[in-house]
Length: 139
Image 1 (tube, rainbow, N blue to C red):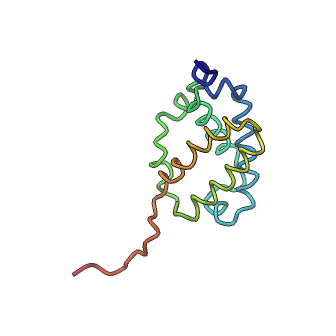
Image 2: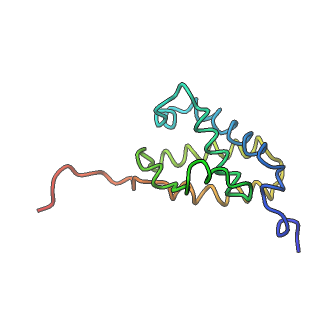
Image 3: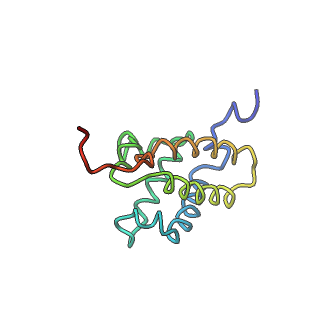
């Protein structure tokens, strides 16, 4: 049995501190990104968003269930539905998360595991197919 089979990613990265750092690096990119920054209604206070994302990621990767205790079931798609998430937003989000991964770990296995989750997760959150919306009703 390999090390990755015996321990969670949460344990292998050293716990919650890793996810806090990952999220801090991620948001450092987001605040300078015109596409993503416009999606944040309260740009004066990112602490709540950072806290929620770090808790969610820590829990997802095997850490404590603090996110569920504070917020209930993640319902990621539902929670992101009020915001326009199309292909451009997905791609910009992935750019910043990839940079955050690069900044927080040099371990190729951990990088690959994180990326293997984030790419389909970002696609799952899309709520815009990229097709034009017609204002007229079909006959």
